Image (tube, rainbow, N blue to C red; front, side):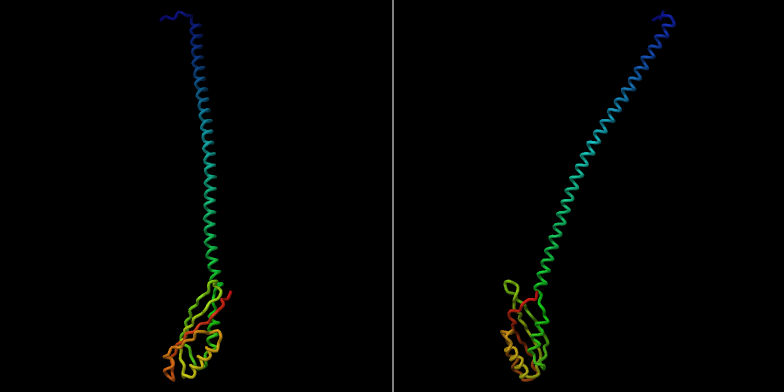
Length: 190
């Protein structure tokens, strides 16, 4: 093809073509920038939605963790309260052995020496009163001192069911004796 246009027209056409190319390029750049801005805006919206949902999830988890922590603390408090109640009950039902020993020592003659004392406690249904079964073994130098001990036990209203084994009365001196008796209505100290 032969171009017969004058050179001024040729330059004008060339310039117009260049203008169109520049306009098209600017249009493409602007379109690209618009798309880039639109994509970044959509990403921002997506991230905001994700952050909000994560915040909501975090709040729910904190509430759940807080509630499970509160439940765990309540279980611990309940366990501690139960233990304290048992300890309180135990201490309310304590028995003073010193009073039992004092009662027994009051009826022992001076020459009679106890060697072993054992006690068995039993409570009534309310757990306030009970009886104490006492087993006492010891040494008496004479049968008369052992008889005095038996008489003292029988005279006391606190002691009942006094039982000396028959072997205690066989020897007249150096007697190793064994006796059992019960202290009734022994009140627990509160």
